[in-house]
Length: 143
Length: 143
DNA sequence: ATCATTAATAGTAACTGTTACTAATATAGC
DNA sequence: GCTATATTAGTAACAGTTACTATTAATGAT
Image (tube, rainbow over all chains, first blue to last red):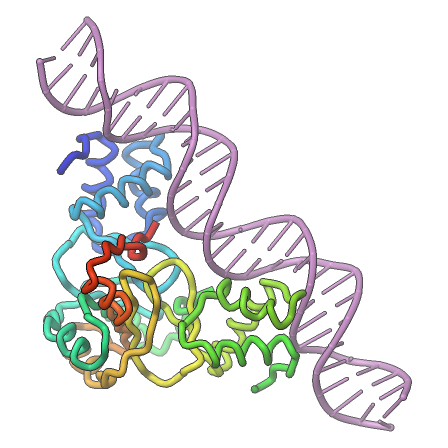
C-alpha cells in the first residue's frame, strides 16, 4: 500500500468499501465503519478515502451531485445511477477507448480522458413501475 | 419565461450567462453581475440560476468537482475541461444518441440519459507546453 | 396614476460536505 | 523496549449552498 501505514482504521475502511457495491459517499461508509470501530472519526474516513484514491488503491467517482463517491473497483468502467432510488451501479458496457481520440480530432483540445455516466431506472424500480406503484422521483434534484 | 417575473436582476443574470462561454459557477457569475448591480445578493444569483434551470431557460452542468456550473446553451452537447487551467469549453462533437439504447441492451437498467464530459489540454495550455514552460497542474484536485 | 396582490429581493443565518489543526496514540524498524 | 513519525480523534474552520424574513418591486386591474 505504498507509503501508507497499515492501521486498523484504514484496513476496515478498505474492507468495507470492497464489500460494498454501492459506490458510497464518505458519510455512508462512515456509518458502516462505525459499527466495527465505534470511536472512528469522520475526518479519518475522509482522509483515508482521499489517501487510498491518491494511491490508486480505490477510485474516486467524480459523478453528478455534490457528494464524492468511492469505488473499490479501479479499472476503467462506467456507472449507472437510478433516477428513482439514487443507487449507483456498475454497468457492464465496453469501455470506449476510441472516444478520446475521436474527441481530439473533433476539436482543438488534446483530449486525455473522459467520464461517462448513465442515468436510468434500476430493475427494482422498473418492477415497481410495472406493478403500478406511483414512485415519486427522488433524486436528480441537485439542490 | 414561464411564471417567472421579469426582474432586472434576473435579466442581467441571464444576459451575462448568455454572453459568457465559460460555464461559470454561481460565484463567478456573481462577481460579473455585481459590476452591473452592485447591491445584488449572492443568494439571489443562486436562486435565479436554479429557477432558470428548472424552467429550461438555461442548463445546469452536473460536472466533476463540487461546484455547480451553468450553461446558457440548452441543447444536448458535450463539454471539455482543461486539466491545466480549469476552463470548461463546449466540444463540437456529435451527440451519441445511440449510447442510451446500447447501454440499456448491455445491462438490466432502463437507461434514459447519459452525461459525458471530456478532460484534456486547451489550445492555450498546449501552446505553453510547446514553448517549454513548466505549467504546474492546478485543477483535478478534488480537495 | 393608483392600488392590491404577490413574487422576488437583500442581508443574514443556517445547513451540508469537506478539510485543517493539534495533542495523543499507534505503527514500523531496529 | 525505544525512537521516529505517521496517523488518529475531536474539534474548529472552510467552501458551497439554501432558508428565513422584513422590505421592495413587478404585475394586472381600474
